[in-house]
Length: 319
Image (cartoon, rainbow, N blue to C red; front, side):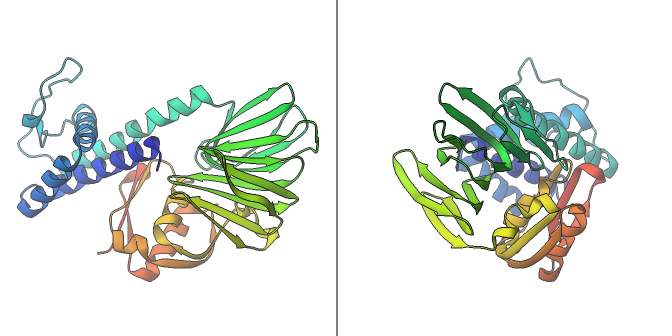
């Protein structure tokens, strides 16, 4: 998992702890678990401090751990309310979700040449005539210099229809993984801790640093690279980048992975608060044009439910 992935994960964990502590302020076992999480990593404490600050600024919530943090010039001291109405902490949760999502979005905006928002797709024709289709919440940076055609996938996933030119290889980079082609059609997916490559037609070479992961990945072959391991499997070529037809196809995948995928098509934040639910396996076809309904369809068979706190926060758990 990259440092950016770890930061995003800590940010979500911090928000989850805020929700849990506000809902059960007198739950001492919960408080002990929270203290253990804080002590397990100094970065956890920092993530929580930032999240709590957003709550205090946006919702006038009483700080739950203010005694642990030294005062700083950038923290606005707000009056403490003895009793916080439910509507206040829900409103603060919504605002925190929005503000926590801003920083990574701004970073991508600075790096990207082309990007899409949540629920948006886009077709981009590059200078050589190659076409890139961007999925929801996706960003790429393009660098055509000399005899090289380079594209960096910064977030999300994209489908590439590459114009053949043997004198100028086409490279797609996602984190440390590089896909090299001369002319073909393929999908590259970047998700926290993993990279996926699906080939619709033609062939590609996939490598990570000096390590060759696949010398020739051909039509109907799929590569998944995670935790330093590459796994190649077969799929129906017509299903490559099914997202282009508004479909999410799951074949014995963990719920957590599908939740992560559907979250890219929803505004705000989606929190999966049950690890056991996240490990359940799912097979099916889901409609990306109705992502919240798809989310409910994914978890309902396993006893999960979706709680909506306005349009910006969905919390998934078992009753």
